Length: 552
Image (tube, rainbow, N blue to C red; front, side):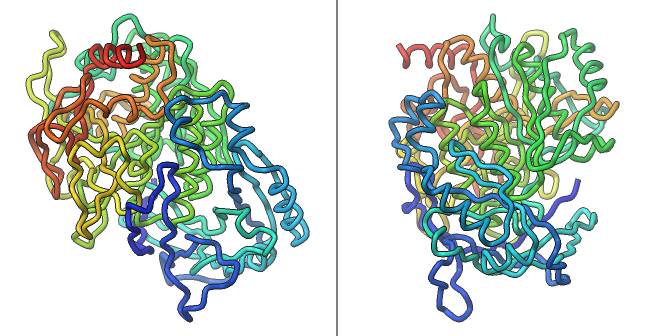
């Protein structure tokens, strides 16, 4: 699997400017001449990843996603009391007049409109490079980059801001996919079974965390977002057969031309795909699992989450184990992604995301603390990691501390966002200030076993292996969500709204076991919420009782 670490390309935004609807502030850099084009698209500035470029042919076909504004902002009340999709779309989808205007302008410029979805507020277009360069005021180049893993990647690159024609101004809030550099990295760490100090099957971890008895995900749906790799049915049948579990119903959905394509490398993207499916399938075996495969680009990532959130039936949870430091995203892409998460919350979907596997630095080499996105979105359940030692015969925990195996060997992500302000539901838990003196959204919210030395037994490309990383915690919490929804009969949506109210700066919330030992670099665990393991690890039975009490 190719990885890339793009440089920081944006100035940090003051987090208190981020609204509760996920509208992150525009923080693009100004053009070198200091004069912004009259129709410059806010937040679209992008720095080059590499200087090794060549011009692309003018007749090369390019696909892009245009994100349109809402009819009106989504109020916080809708996040607390989700709506049926038809009502949500009618109120908060795109205005048909905006769609007609944007479609007409794109077609007049020579672009082909591939698809339009008013509810998702997305228009997909295809056009020659010469057309999109003129339409959006940019230059595309063919770029080559060799990231740390040594696997050369080729992509289209653009530099600077985008502009839009006057009729699109304000109507189009993001143009994604023109630059198709790899956007995210999978957050998992694979080791051989023999190298693991101790390892668990996912259902054993669920038992240790006391997931509610009598629940198995029946009637629920869990979606998974993948940006590469694939799975073979034979692996699933063999794995679940060994566990004595009937193979769950797993469906693959392609987005933007991507598909289920296993690469045959257990250490590549297949490892992420199989980890996600097998964790969810072992913990919630009767749930329907839908895997969305998308290109590893900003457009592909946003499109996959939007498609999943608006799917029929509406999923109960969406699991995301891919991400990158929030500094590596353009402001327009980050805002468009966060707004897709607002859709998910407004429809009653709980979205879980891995907080990262590289400690408080999040793979950035400037010596400062950084948080991973999309985990840093206030509309997602960010999942940090622990190192768990437990007796599987008695389900008793011997020890559980913050996952940190040392420099270069993996540690849970976590910290404070520079892009999103402090959510109201974190106001009482003592989120620290950033280096710039701002108080932003604290990451993570929750935690679970993530240390590969105490990792998950899985099967990938015919090989039995052990995988850790916060990639395992996102599907763990997605599966738990499915079981909680089954038990309560209610969608949970933005789970943070349900679990934070009783937490304080010195005590965690009902339904959690606090983790108070360890650090991830810049931050240390303590009583109550912290920037390593959030509120702590789940006590499933207690969490169910707390949710039932609050809803009652």
